[in-house]
Length: 189
Image (cartoon, rainbow, N blue to C red; front, side, top):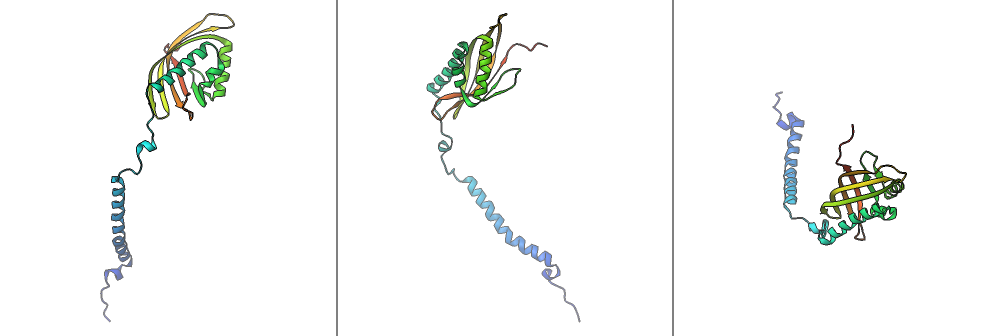
């Protein structure tokens, strides 16, 4: 009995299955590529302004930010802890120099009660820049402060810079969400 050579599919069943699989997958791969390409080229389904509404960064918003800075300065100088702490969001964070982070309006209030009980303070705050993005404003400037210990002693003066993130609230008002400041003076060795 003579044996006839087997066809490629019979000789290697595995090779035949791979060939059939490749020939059936190839059209699917091309179709997926076309779908992805078409999706990338299609115009967006929604208007960007609907997703990220443009906020008014007019003089009205700048005036609101200036008012916060003014209220910050006056409430500090008057040792008005209620007005001062009300300028901050519930989850606000203050990052004082050479001290731990203060998290939350209540902790900020407690910190300022201690500060106001310990010192008579006179602060001057100058705003140099404000930038807006949606419901946030980033503002920066300089400060100068003189602290006189209530228990007696020499007044201490310092100058520095600050950066503050202010967040628009649901009612349209603005509150301080993050606040950091530091001295322009070198740290003593």
